Length: 511
Image 1: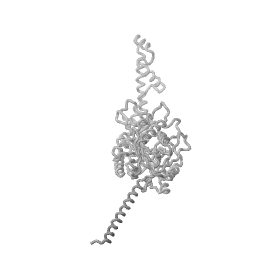
Image 2 (image 1 turned 60 degrees about the horizontal axis):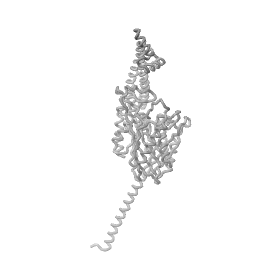
Image 3 (image 1 turned 90 degrees about the vertical axis):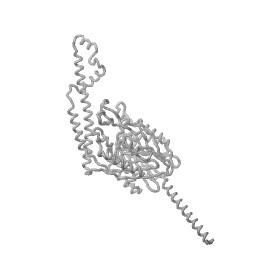
Image 4 (image 1 turned 180 degrees about the horizontal axis):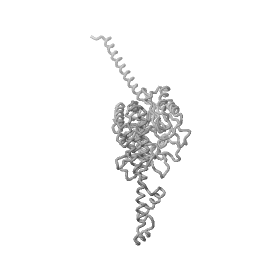
């Protein structure tokens, strides 16, 4: 029999247990809510070279992201690359990471640095100014709501590789000529998607916009001044439209084989501003459709993979053989450029009677002579041969340029003393916005592949990040021995692609 005292005691114990469970549940929920509340801060510094002729300002920008569990930093730099090429020194990444670890205890592997790949020249003390930008961002952390979406832009870029009727690929560079139109069969793909991350303060004002797009920002400006190029202009459009101190962060995508549209135009001075304005406007259109929310996932993964280095001696020999074959194909000719050009004008202006008025041709025919017709036949033969020599010269320019790249990279691979190269691959999730990175110039098909196979709807790819290892074309593109810059300025063996895509698939699952 339970006495009244014992009954009260049992009820009290049950009540106490229930109360404790409620308190524990509240603490767990509150902890998760706090962890889910993301903070962000932004900062920027002018890194324009004081020496080069200035057209517009180059920036380093810092976006700090922080929740209860982790802090990460996204840094964007208006430069051609992080180390290796351009004006940023090889010690840049390690110096910045060490300083951020020392000052703020930020894990080095949580620091992401992306180069826009504009060909601007930065100042000497870019490391110090980068840390200063992060310092500013850390001082101004605020709670943010997060949203993501996409924009669309297909008018400002084109794939620079063309498929030729002989099965090879060629690319359009200012370093050499394109093949004749009659040899071109098709063009490569582009990725018109703009990946957008939006961070809004609690008062509804936008703090930061991160936008990812694939295109070489190498259009240049009239006068040839130092410039952040089209992505500098697009970021300015976004910041001017949003106002209130909002900062735009351009993240370069898989733009290895993507040029600004009409890149080889010679009728007008190169001008990146109109293209950048179009990219900025298209980003704003996508941005307006984004709704932000408070509690979001935030995760950073950084892993190192070993990729096989290429053995390029066979490709070098093959291209040298092509070079010799081209040289031997050059034929003797009576013409030089001074005589060839007027003949081209004459014979294209009047196909039937190029050398004189028709009456003299008819006069000769009446007298039983054909002196002008014989002259025309000889000139046409020599013009055809001279034009063939010009095409050979253009091919030799391409072969020689790309052969030098192959030799340089073969020497680099040998000097490394290793058959592999270690690279960082970072995975970043902010809400439903997911991004993976690579330190090379990924060609656009790599990005399209990753987006297609990702389990996340909003997946984007950033090249030129946390280092620089030159071009990273597809295994298929690497079969194109020495005919394009992407396959020549590459230190990787074709197997790299599968290794990288497999690693990305694993990281995407973890995110």
